Image (cartoon, rainbow, N blue to C red; front, side, top):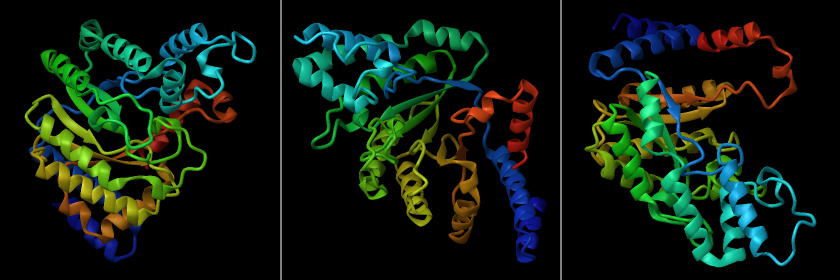
Amino acid sequence: ARCLGRYWSLAAQGRKEVAERSLALGLQDMRRVYWSRPAWRGANLGGWLLLEPGPASPFFDTCFEKMQELSEEKAEGRSGSAENAPGLDCEHSLCAALEAAGGKELRQQLFESHRSSHYDEKTFDKLAATGLNAVRLPFGYWAISGPGEGEAFEGPCLDIIDKAVKMAEDRGLQVLLDLHGNPGGESGDRPCGRKNQQWTWTQWRQDEAVENLRQIASRYCDASCVTGLQVCNEPCTSIPTESLCTFYENAIKAIRESGMGPDRVAVVLPIFTHWRLPEISACWHKRGNFFKYDNVAFDFHFYHNFSSVWNLMSQQQHLQVVADHARE
């Protein structure tokens, strides 16, 4: 209560940065009052239900080799691994290429094999044995409702999500479900499942995404191990702040109405890049949302790559950057 009172006092004085720190401390205290589960210490189950070269490179290679076998034209211009194969740079392009090479049956066969074997009981045994207590499970919307009109994704595959939740529950692991790829994409980059250089934020089908979240919440609201639901992954910085906050409000409402209460499930809202925090925080505050919604967390992604500068830094310098981010 003291922290929250200090927040209102500092905000009235216009001392925004210090006020936000007091708010963060107050909200942490509120969380401890009703949230009895341990903080997540876990691993991300990438390359399984939303595919990118990198986490899923072995599967891209397998598909590429299969398409080469079926093609009358061999190696010329198409040699190398799937990481560099022309056009195979996201899950959607892979799905389209498989269908073109061998029909929907080939795509279904290869995806079913991958999804049934990429992670298994042994994987979850190892995670539990390390002392971790949670897993994050990213998937695209097509895993829930199937592909949209004119899209080549392979889905749905709710049985695989059911299997993952059961394997986690059997080992006492918490699960953060992550709608990593929204309908239309929350960006035009491949982490959403489809790389599209012509993407604009108006292509993001927010209403459909909210319905997907409603479906997920209804399906897993009684699963005691599911303690988090992330509403999207990395929303593009071109999305207007007001629109993004409205989507987050609608997403929270749908999730809570579908049985995932704040006493059991945290709703995770990505800010993505930390420099967007001031504008999103200001919009959230203006709408009174910091005190309207319980057990909601903002998500930041701090990458130590995508620039040659990171390669020049020592381990100690990397650790110092992490410490600096923690104080923000």
